[in-house]
Image (cartoon, rainbow, N blue to C red; front, side, top):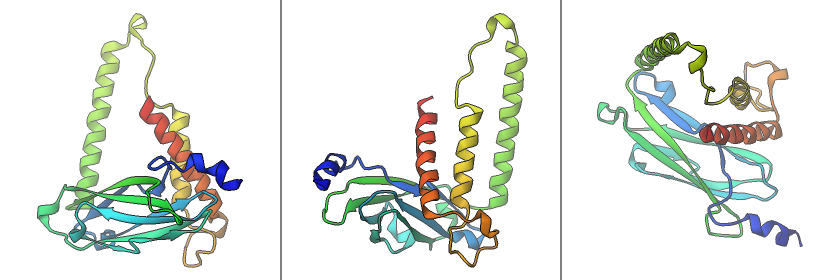
Amino acid sequence: MHQQKRQPELVEGNLPVFVFPTELIFYADDQSTHKQVLTLYNPYEFALKFKVLCTTPNKYVVVDAAGAVKPQCCMDIVIRHRDVRSCHYGVIDKFRLQVSEQSQRKALGRKEVVATLLPSAKEQQKEEEEKRIKEHLTESLFFEQSFQPENRTASSGPSLLTVFLGAVCVAALMLPTLGDVESLVPLYLHLSVNQKLVAAYILGLITMAIFRT
């Protein structure tokens, strides 16, 4: 009876996959970033098998590229960049995580994670700061030119509450998990796996809402 109730949800390719982060950025001048960690969450009541695929497997080493995640648990997947050369700067690679039920072979869901190698974290921060300044100047100029009561239009895009909730969920996922004794973060900020699963779920809903606006 339990399998009959759950079976309609297990349609090939339609099962949501919860992974954090969804983007990996490696910096050539910062060796500490050459190793990144993907966390795969399983909020379901059944175990999941997973497999990690990559568009350029010769550039990366994936520790535990295949395995299983118990129900209501999560697993860290370590990805190392082993070909840090200038010819790869700015190239976008993709990882695909495919999940399936342990008793089946077909992929019930999949999630893509992009990976990029950049020359320097400082240069990236400088470019982002310049981009923010340009956007701010553009918005200020547009505001000055269009600040007339009869020309005011309804604002579009995500609300401040949506952005705030998304930031809270991201912060929650970055906090250490209960039982992590090596963390320097105070114990009262350690979250349980279930709390992080809820944060990942809410973050997914917020992301879909933002894309629809």
